[in-house]
Image 1 (spheres, one colour):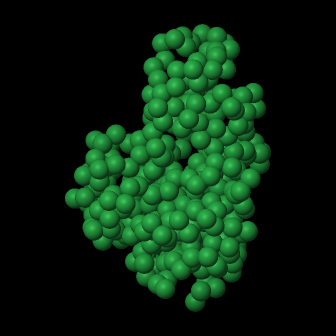
Image 2: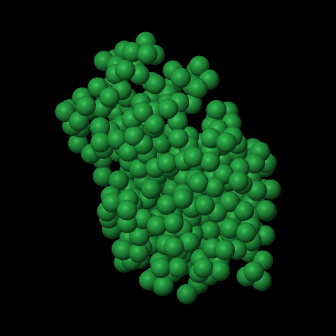
Length: 350
């Protein structure tokens, strides 16, 4: 079996987690140029924006990079469920003086498709990663035909085995500590999911591809611990959220560097799918896991005006303050410096 650096052609077996909404190509470029694998999140980009960011990324580094997509099945619009959701949000709209009836239903995030592949193909990305499983077999085959390495996230051993059987070249073992969206796709039962250092050795023993640890890793000691437990490499997201190259908002940065960051929870109130963030007012009052929230990503549309209104007032009470459980690595430093500090954890490999 190849090592992760042999598979990815990177200097270090370190992946910067793709974080939609808080970064563009600049962060990915900085991490790749520092010897890790920088990642660009594509799930929330329009086709035009995706093309621009891919051009910037491919021109900004001569080293390998990754582009990431979601693989969910878009849900059918359910008028009854949407009505329940809007009723739950109505008191907040009244408080803000906003017109709930004027809010259009919408998705906000689209899955990987043939159209996405058409945009990607001229760039022949070195690595393409996925969340919520893998796309259709013909799309996986098309991505691999470019020479791209395929990665995806698993939250259980069964998911890891499924990913390998369907073409993943390496598996990201996403522990329950990780920030942002849970990568689960075979079961929505969150009780099946484990912490990183429980999940990691089980997946490493179950599959014959490199396994990448993700969730709660924020410093060199965490990196070394993951390697000791059988990881071929690590994926780190939260530690980059306050980096100079991230586009994380001032409100979000302040929350990450405050005492509030010690309390995170998995919630579905922002998108309709479980994701970990810093607990705020709307999570406390509606959830954190609300049965009223429509299927992913349909919850986003009616939440967006509340987020914009309260952010304009300086409040993050209706914002998805995505964060892992370990914010100790969140520092206002250049991404290259954060990468350098993390890679000291790989000294055990030399």
